Amino acid sequence: MNRWLIPCAAAAALLAGCTPQQDRGEAALGTNVPLASASNLSGAAPPGTQVWRAPDIAENPASNFYIPPVKVDTGPEARFTGVDPQQVAATLTEDVRRAVGQRFPVVNTPGPGTHSLELTLVQVVPPQPTYITNGPYSWSQGLVGMPNAAGSTIGQMLVAGKSVVSATGKLLAAFVVPVTPRDLMMGIPSGPSGAAVFARDASQEFASSLAASLVRQRELNRQVSQQ
Image 1: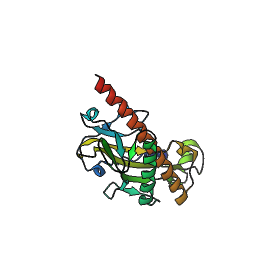
Image 2: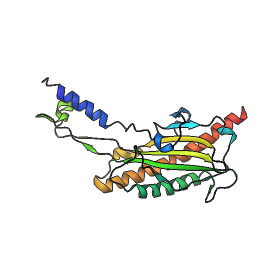
Image 3: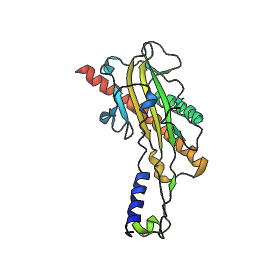
């Protein structure tokens, strides 16, 4: 066997392990709307966010938001590693209500002008160490000359959501958001405690990005209305 084959295969496996999962979470939405990248939400929504918006979204401004408890997906894309998804969903509900409430009125009961933010937790997969040691040398020796090194998967929380007019059920927007905490490279503990830290940080980051995206969308709606 070519002596470079194993290191090359190890490199490919490592790169694959460091790539966020490609499950998109569309099934959890229960809609057939076509999602697309949200370039005009750049800087507000996390990279990889997919969004669909109704053509008349600017004509349906929200006076306030109703945020029901986050649901836990039970479909084919659901994946939860080392965490209690119901507990994570409860934390996510609190974080979203707090973050959105700092920017917009949040109500306990839908009323006139209310938009409901219906969220579903699809995945929570914390980073996992990846060891590749085929052959007499570790992959790290073949790649960078450092024995006994190891890589890790990046980890991801995946949330699917919809914004609907509470009074009519009209769908205004659908979105799927992958979240990897920015401070992940600082390191997290291994095992259950690490999974809990990852879920907590991802929940807070999703909530902040959702609030920022709602602000950005409001600005975009105003621009359309002024044309």
